Amino acid sequence: MTTGVIKNIGWLVNIREQYSLLKGAALAGLPVLANAWLRIREGRILEWGPMNTLLVHDNEQVWDAQGGAILPGWCDSHTHIVFAATREEEFVDKIKGLSYAGIAAKGGGILNSARRLQSTSENDLFNMAWERLQQLMHLGTTAIEIKSGYGLTVADELKMLRVIRRLKDTAPIPVKATFLGAHAFPEEYRSNHEAYVGLIISEMIPAIAKEQLADYIDAFCEEGFFSAEQTERICRAGMQYGMLPKIHANQLHLSGGVQTGVKLGAISVDHLETMDRPAIETLAASDTIGTLLPTAAFFLRMAFQPARDLISAGCAIALASDYNPGSSPSGNMNLVVAMSCIQMKMLPEEAINAATLNGAYAMQLQNETGSITAGKLANLILTHPIPSIAYIPYSFGTNLVKKVMVRGTWL
Ligand SMILES: N=CN[C@@H](CCC(=O)O)C(=O)O
Ligand SMILES: [Zn+2]
Image 1: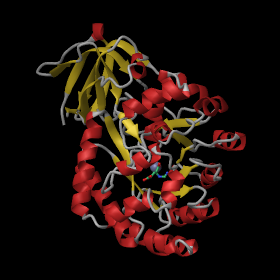
Image 2 (image 1 turned 45 degrees about the vertical axis):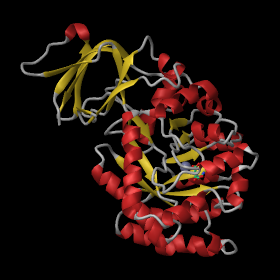
Image 3 (image 1 turned 180 degrees about the vertical axis):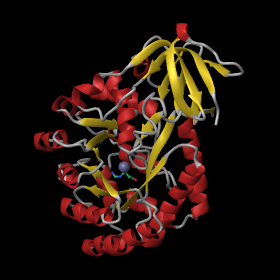
Image 4 (image 1 turned 90 degrees about the vertical axis):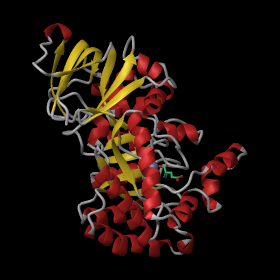
């Protein structure tokens, strides 16, 4: 745990003494201090001010930002980084014309990942996910949610969640675990979906709860996958054990996932590529966060999420990477932020808030990270010198991240 002061910060971004979930117009308010210093004590943010007020303490460590910006690290609230193999062959199939749903119907997609994961050891899965997590941290992600959902048997879902637990115990950043047994129906349940729903409810959830392996419960609420009614039953079963819902909703169709999530008081409903007025208004009238995953829409060549409509209606919006081998094989949150500005017309301020403070809320980590606030973790991004905040999404594809600090230590 390090103590010291960062000087010559060009822009100190998202400074907040008080904070709350940002909805609608509030998303555009990003408090920034130009030409600043920031003091860290015991791995946490202590205080900050304009450069002309800096008094360096005796024997204090001083780091020079050399005009770079300091931001709270990205809070990626939706990932699937535990997987056994990449799926670039399906990527090529898609280039040749097959649809995402078509690939899934052929036994590809999630079931392909499940077959590969079932024959991979817990240790190998951990090592692969650990490597991915290291890469993400160097790209500025300093809090993350990770889902199961490529196991699809009691033993393999437990295996995945134990890997996530090990990541939690090993990583220096906060990690949250989500149980997504309801990700796809395994082949052997093709003609008896109810039996698989029963397995999730009566065997998987109690076993996971016994080992306290999951913070959240998720279901892929989608045509051909889990209906709104099945999603509700599965989530309610998880809620009995304290797992709050975070739901895959309205990705390919108007699945009813948004309404189901709001009805259950879900922390978030995620994806939202396919929205209509009732879904937008239901979300806007709730405290459930709409988590947008623009790199998944990009990779699947789908229409992007209607961010402007959601913000105009007053919704709380978060941004996340959806890092997974099928629909978003990238966990680069810098790209997510840029894409949300370029393709969804989010303002740079809205996108940064959605990828930091609201992302933290979407993992119930708002008191630990997501803004420059005294007492929060010193989990920070230092950029190369930039002329403005808008330059961050504007210069998409250029790695502006110079260094990342986690709990007061530079990686
Ligand atoms: N949509 C469902 N689940 C993942 C994709 C998983 C996969 O294709 O492996 C997603 O969030 O996009
Ligand atoms: Zn996902």
